[in-house]
Image (cartoon, rainbow, N blue to C red):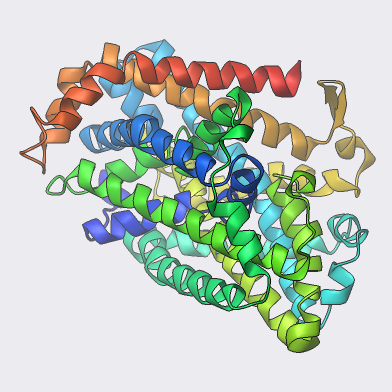
Length: 467
């Protein structure tokens, strides 16, 4: 049933869909604050360096694996390895990872829906209270929002690659970009916004250390959806007439641009209404910033634009974040669906039903693990800290495994598939690739420097979270 896999209708469709999968909560919230706390423009330069030197080659390798095999991550590793059980296991990990990431991402997206509903009914003042997030997360009514979200996501996925994923990206990605730029322009006109711009764009190299450099690489890697199997799967939907190098370059530029503009929104907004803000006190947690801190920032706009104006600004921002979360969630859930279709030879509709059932089974414990159920709220303990089921899923699959999967992709392409095979695929649709400087750089780095760096990130993450 390979005909059911679908194809993107054009290069633009691929770019928008891949960018939609990459743009998420980390781009819009965590990235600006990480930059402000860790040297401003100095952090940006390091981040951009890693995007170009480390992440871009891995992006190309993942897309090439998918397009060459026309398979999901499991099928891609199996086909290119000649049926190796070891690489089959790696492929399974690349399917399990996005599935579990979708579990905790669904919970966060549900909270966004709840916040949007409260804002639309005049609840900005309530949301700015420190106790509100914990109370909202522990509401049993969140299950209603969860059902609505999952129905929405799977209806979109029923539309297939072109009618569902690509159509969503073509509408939401431009909308997100326009909303982000418009809100940024509004914030930059406010008094004291220049203080936030200075924190964000004036380099402070004294703040740079090994931990910051490691954080910049981790942020760059996670931001581009690497290690999740998304780009392998999307590569299998990508035309052989188009250039992988050129298309992935545009995805990286779009993703980085969104992150950059988010910085021009978040930091000036914070300082416009509280010039005495200490950025060292800001959490880099997307969840903490979105749901606990930013409602206070929007409420502080009341003196300038009134309560109604402040609420409208908050609604626009949370709608923007919801769009980013929705496009990412659809992309992530598509990965295991493509596996069920390819490996088990079932129809897309049946694959979506299977995935919907599995999502419900795992998402319910994650939803109740922030106060509704004591068992799942205090699910385990590691690193000297009590962790919920939600925390466990986030730490293991989002924070830890992504660089490990990226490491295996590099080793696989360089030493099992061979760099010559990778070059042959990258030359398809791009006759100028072979012999180019990019070709020479990838041959030099993909099997040596890049996997070493990713392995260091993985080990560093394990040390920080679990030891």
